[in-house]
Image (cartoon, rainbow, N blue to C red; front, side, top):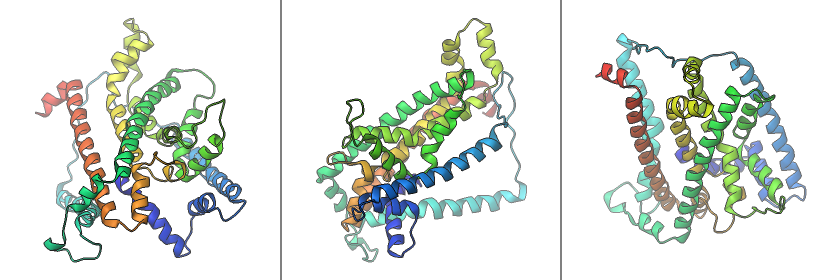
Amino acid sequence: MLRFRVFLPLIAVSQLRLRITLPTIRIYGYVGGFRDPNGMGIATSLSMALLGFALVGLVLQNYFTRKQHFTVITGKSAPIEVTDLRRWRIPLAILVGVFAVIVLAAPVLAVAITSMMRALGLAIRPENMTLGHYGRLLQMPLVARSLRNSFFLALSVPTIGVFAAVILTFVKRKGRMPGRNAIDYIVSMPYAIPGIVIGVAMILAWIRPVMGLSIYNTIWILFIAYIVRFMIFPMRTVGAAWKQLDSSLEEAARISGAGEARTLRDVSGPLISTGIISGWLLAFMPALTELTLSILLYSPRNETIGVTAFNVMQEGLVTVAGAYAMIIVVVVVTLNIVLNLITAKRARRLNPVHTEAGN
């Protein structure tokens, strides 16, 4: 439910009022509350504690998965095995359908209805419905600016991320440099800890110019923070796709006279293209609606979709925020469908034998 994460801070606020607090809520309060002169120091200490827990989890994960192999793409063709569910087919289909309705359809329907209500709390009747909230959004300069900023970040960050992921995965797979396995820890750590911790780290790192470069209070601090935060998605999908390749494919290319660059371009690259596209999309969706980083790092005229939706909700304009959320849902779903069609078409072109057999 990445497309609805812009509303998660409201849940955190309600928990705070009920005296059910979390470390991330405390960190946000100390950074943005200006009530404690030592607030930034306390927030940093809490962030380091969460960082330590995340590091322990990553070490355990890598320990249990380091010896596993997932090679499924080799030089030999293999038939696709279909599991016959027999009498469990219909019950499982019903269970999956009910799950989809509760988890996916119901929240989207609730947001859609809210976006068309004249006022929150009215009965769901035709006379209480309107599309005026969508027109109101078009008249708000803040909305157009936040859409422009978020789309810039959501398009550029995944693009840089997948390019870096291919290079880093190639270095890890083929390189012999010491410490190359530390790449997993470096990339995984920013996503294993709360985003607000990354926000605090970015503030401490860039609040003063670094080597004469000042990006604080600009959109570029968001750009760097997003890359740090969402680099895990292209790294995981590209790495998983590359693990499925048998080394004999690349060895055959090198025996034929191809160098490393040619092998990457003509052999490995096309075979991991699905992972590249998946990683791009997985980074695009959270980057488009990200809030926990942006709420600490945004500045005037650099608002994002998440920040704007949160501020609109804070002002009590729930119906307008619902209309805003529906626009984002339509955009994300449309892009997802387009990329799935592109991926399916590319898969048919790369595997014509299996496609013809399936037909």
